[in-house]
Length: 100
Image: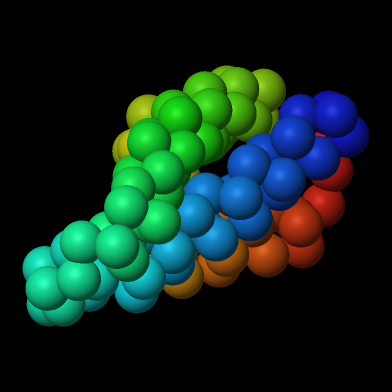
């Protein structure tokens, strides 16, 4: 189970960082500023975020299945990756759980 936890924790942090970049860098630049040169520099963020979130979902499902969580808890863990800070909170809570 250690490998599953490590993978989930890594992906939760990566998804959280990419979510922060998306919400607080890419989206404000695209929708609030009228600077095409800046938009071109942050164009990669949504693509990388999408791939990382997909891997986050897979690792969350894998972890929840191995921990024998209910479908509701699994969905909550998956949805934690949609908000910038929630994936960090989920990662900390998983780290504090005793291994079974």
